Image (cartoon, rainbow, N blue to C red; front, top):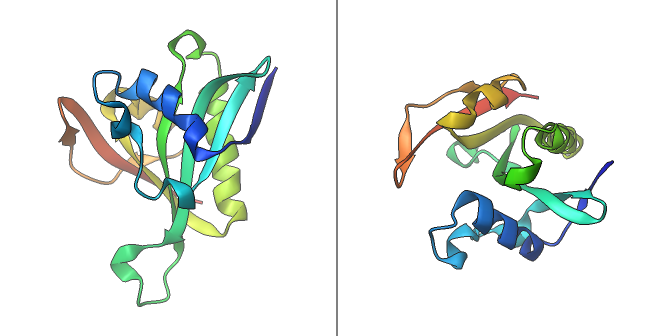
Length: 145
């Protein structure tokens, strides 16, 4: 059984580092505004097996206009031995529901292209050209809530 619950942002760091950027310094996985986000962990037998962070706010490009709220999730990571078992699906569904509850009308992320099919299952589509973080290709994926 998987239990999804809020966690302190510091609790996300070890899994973010191990899964997403193991070859980078530990501080590389920290996000400048982590303290302003909502952070969730998926626990299996009280062991943290996946994390995701959600940031909700006005779209910076149109902040002076009355615009819909946007939400962004970042640093989505599941332990390799727990991937492809539905845990990420549960976690992302939780974040989608939470973003809606917080009043967001759009949800987006910078997605690694090797995970594009996963995000498409949640009605997310690429809305940018491909860009790179180091050698890894990404695109911005978005959906309306």
